Image (cartoon, rainbow, N blue to C red; front, side):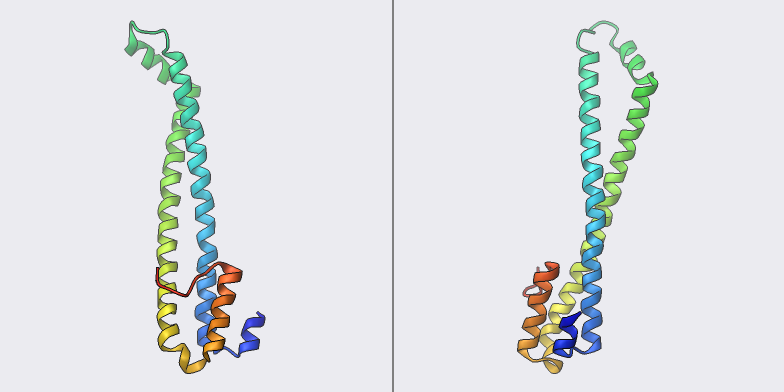
Length: 147
């Protein structure tokens, strides 16, 4: 990257920034899967609920027999299994996203702390501001404050 050569950034700082960039990009993948599984779950749950409402609309007598018949239908049973699978996928990707976000935030806070303590030893204020602006513009990583 041209920012590294222009400012003659020490390797220690380059490695920490590159690791932060990698973690920021890793957050995007579980987020996409998390949202995809959420929308697929919502769509399937809504369609199954609509199907159940239409099916049970006129049935008032022998309700338990109708419920058993409804749930033993192979197509509906397969959709129910798929629905539960999508729910667990949603939960899994949600926790993965939270883990990766917490690791990213931890590293980001460490870098913010090192900007205040260690970076002034190696870099000028102008170089530090240029690096922070570059990260904010290119990767949407804000290093101005702890969040």
